[in-house]
Image (cartoon, rainbow, N blue to C red; front, top):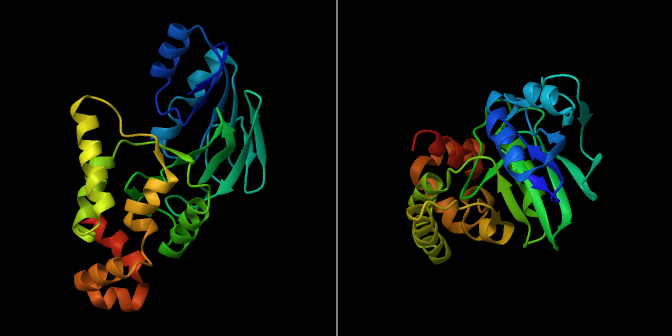
Length: 240
């Protein structure tokens, strides 16, 4: 949720009740809802929130999201709380997945990336191809290094266990895993991450690195030869 003390916007509300509780607790009026893709754990609360608050809904141009909504695609913009949010097409997890990026929220860039990019990982390829997801992640990784990466699931520790199996000698990854384990032990979230952190530790943003190529080849050399390192890593993660 984003708010200015009076008005609020919420991203991917899978369940309306936590949003309604937060609005009541903080004394906020919901103005808008941003949706990155059609999965129920991102849209399940949209209808009730729209009904209760009158909030406007903004979502992907080519996905089945509860109407009415303003449909968006690459190059479109949304103005929320006086901030300009750019829409980025990021197919892969779903065919029409989008992300929302703002160059300055409290002085720093912010990315709402749905299930495309996680800390230490990326989303499963339910509807897209490895090539599509790799291209989408390349778009996101080109954003400024200090971009706050606001993904939608706290999968970080399980993602990092896979990342360590793939790139065990990565010192930045070792340190980040220890940091995240300490946060979770205190009941704190690991998110948001930053793009700089993800470029240093996330195997799905590092698939061109020699260490990742070697690890993927050791896991399945035939698949690397046929489909490439990224596809091999994503298939490996599915069964890890």
